[in-house]
Structures are given as C-alpha cells and as structure tokens.
Image 1 (cartoon, one colour):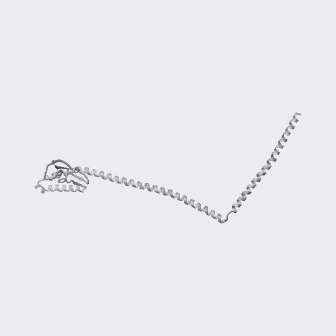
Image 2 (cartoon, helix red, strand yellow):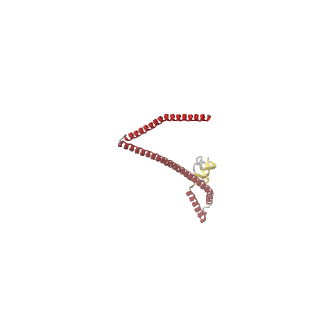
Image 3 (cartoon, helix red, strand yellow):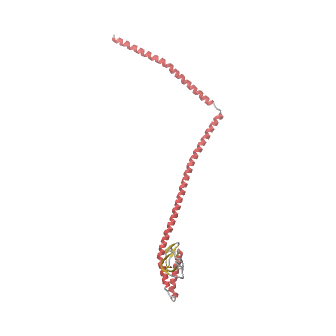
Length: 230
C-alpha cells in the first residue's frame, strides 16, 4: 500500500511539472512572436532607407561627389609629395651647410699651415745665415789686409770674385747689410759697444761700424756693432 501511494504522488508531481512547463511555453510564445515582428519591421525599415538613399540625388550629383573625392585624393597626394620634398630639401640644405663649414675649416687649416711652414722656413734660413756670416766677415778682413801692391795679384782677384759672388747670393736670398755709419742710433738695429766725443757729428749718431749687421727679409739676423757719438 505504501508503494502504491508513493507511485501516485510521483505521478502527480510529474503532471504538475508538465503543466508548469506548458504554462511557461504559452507565456513565452507571444514574446518571441513580438521579437520576430520587431526584427521584420527593422529589416523593412533598413530596406526602405537603402532604397531612398539610392533614389536620392541625381546622376550629376553622384558624379560631382565622385569628382570631389578624386580631387581630394589628388590634393592629399600633392600634400604628401610636398612633405616628402620638403624633407629632402631640408636634408640637402643641411648637407650643403656642413660642406661649406668643412671647406671653411679646411681653408683656415691650410692658411695656418702655410703660415707655420713659412715661419719655420724663415727660422731655419736665419739659422743658416747666422752661421755663414762669420765666413763673410773673414773674407772682408782678409781683403782689407791686402796691400795696394798685392791687389793686382791673381789670387787676390779670385778671392774678391768669390766674395762678391757670396754677397750676391746672400742678397738674392733676402740677406742685406744694415746701414750704420752716419745714421741715427737705433737700438732695434744697432748694438752700441763704444761711445766717443765728436764735434763734427750730432749726438746719438753712429760714427763707426765695428762689425757689420745683417737683416733677413724684415727681421734682424745680427745687430751692427757700432760706436756712437755722445
């Protein structure tokens, strides 16, 4: 008896569950139908909008719009091309500026090198001239010691010829003697080693040259050793 009651109660529960499902299905059906109807209405509205968009505007307006799109595309291409060209121009100007700077720096370097080379050559030339001048002094002393009778001697004439040639070569190099006797004393050119009283000459004048001085171009190689009047 207990088993029969349980089976009956189970059947009743199943029947109640089915009834509940049917009721829910009946309630959901109108909602689904309404959603389908709404979707259909939206589709129809979209189709109408497309038809109206397709029908709006004449062929001329469509062509104008297409032309405007083409023109805008061309303008965009031109602007992009100008932007690229401007970048190239900037790069070219930068390279030109760098090249001009390098050329100017090289020109300055070359001028400095030429000046330094010239200065070094002059220093070397002055050093050589200083070593040669004592030889010239000895020539002059030897020729000054020759008597009037011996001046016609062939050996003496040969020594005079060598001395003159020596002086000519020095002059061609830019080595010239400093004028001293009868000139006003100049400490930049003369070296006073003796003083004397002489009424026939003005004060501070060179009366005698004890050793000849020389200049190489515009610089003094050796100062003249002179006697100056007080």
